[in-house]
Amino acid sequence: MTKDKVTAKVSFNPKKITKALLATLNVRGADVIKKRYGLGEQVERLTLEAIGQEYGITRERVRQIENFSLAQIRKSRSFTEIAGVFDELSELITKYGGVVHERDFFQTISDDKHVQNHIHFFLVLGEPFVKVKEDSDFHHTWVVDPAMSDAVRQALHAVHKDIKEEELISEADMILRFINKLKECRPNANDNEEIARRWMRISKRIGANPLGEWGASQSPNIKARGIRDYAYLILRKHGSPMHFREVAKEIASTFGRSAHVATCHNELIKDGRFVLVGRGLYALQEWGYKKGTVKEIVREILEKNGPLTKNEIIAKVLKERYVKENTIVVNLQNHNYFKKEKEGRFGLASK
Image 1 (tube, rainbow, N blue to C red):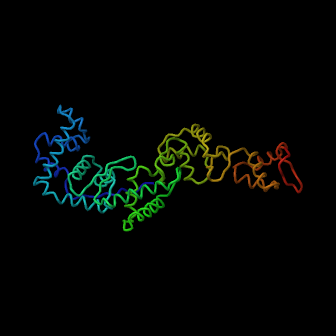
Image 2 (image 1 turned 90 degrees about the vertical axis):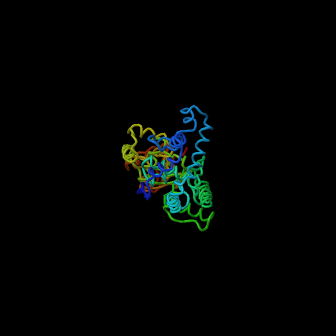
Image 3 (image 1 turned 90 degrees about the horizontal axis):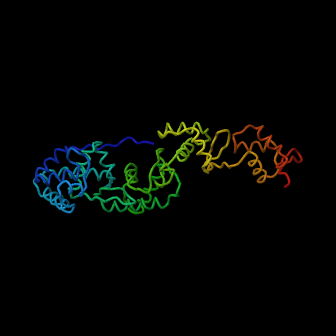
């Protein structure tokens, strides 16, 4: 499931403002800042090590030049003159709840990587902005409300802790879970669904699959790793048994993944999540279908229910298998397993 892209227009020209700020530096200082923040012709942000190699100096010396240059910019008249830029960016982050996913936030402003680099540069310079670096649990975020940032992270931790390993949750339910956890951490927290959706993307531990369902990010239902996982999502979405040829076709059209028909058939046979319920028809075991041949299904039905009429057996087997009625009748004639009893009922043959 895809969402319409949300964009946020800014009133200033990022490149023009950066040019004015860099003009306050000496040549080497300006060049180091351009390279570190991707503000020149190249969009790539260079490491301290890479810049040091270009100048023949240590990475620590590059760091000193960077820090000194940033300090010089902050002391300049040009910096004072663009206070409105920082106010505008601060208001924008506040509009999104005071905490934003770095990449998502930049993309709302522009798809142009150069423009994104300039916005990043302004956030580094501006006093209201705090960058919380990514770790194993969260992506890079920018914050103007530290207390809210802490509450969001606590809520995301709590949501992930409650999710079962392979559980799939609709986006609406996931947003509700997250907001409820957030309210426990900070009762006056914003409960806007769009903001909640943005905050959920900060977490590395939860995520959404291509169909818009949420769960633990490392689950095969979220991070599909092969034909079996894609087939599971297709069948789950379809809601009823499908032929393996149709499954392969839907994998290709839905996920853009090449799925050879024979390969799809073989993968479904080997995976315990799927049950062959007819000639080439597969269902999900979680729907209540049981593995086994028609004979084994009949035997299990009689073990559970005792002797039944032919029609009762047929009706129960057809809930488990897409087969012809005559196939069931033929299996009932196997005297090694079944016997006809009084009143036309069938039971299990004596061992």
